[in-house]
Image (cartoon, rainbow, N blue to C red; front, side, top):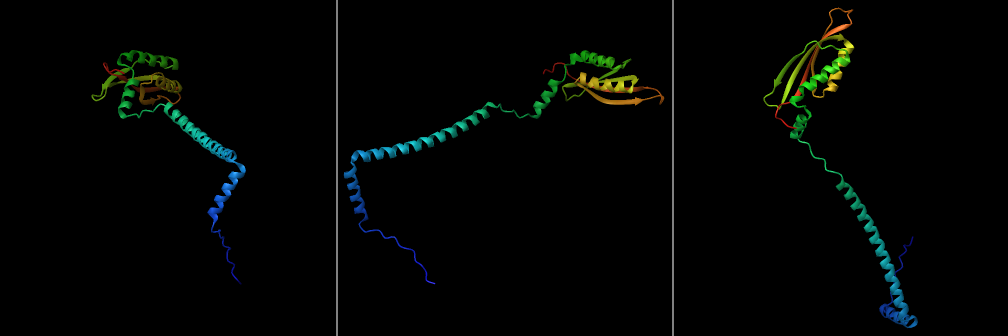
Length: 196
């Protein structure tokens, strides 16, 4: 099988002289105004293309600017520190002067739940390193189990700074509907002089 060789392109040796002659001939035939018009059309096409490129660039920059404006409009979320958490905890606690109001709310919840508060024991405990007071409240009550449960849940909802420390139930006889409960709450309050 014989191999085929690719045809070679040969340029005439006087190509540049020929092109110069053809250009002079075209200028004589068409005249300078036609060539100037063609050049103007080429410039107009170039200007149109460049204008389209600038429009695309402007649209891209407008989108970037809109994204940056939305990002700048969102407020920066401050990073919470441990000190902020402690300060928020103290701000959440009611003032020491509101203890009577807190106890009144506790008594109202007991009345609404059908639990009679015959007596109560109160004991204040202060931690030397904390700026709040633990006010321990011990309530011996006698009622049916559902009423005691409603009282505990209602008290924790009505007095947000109240915590349940312990509950002990006792029933003298199995057939008895009432239970004796010893409920220990802890009321947390800010000490006097500590501001929010």
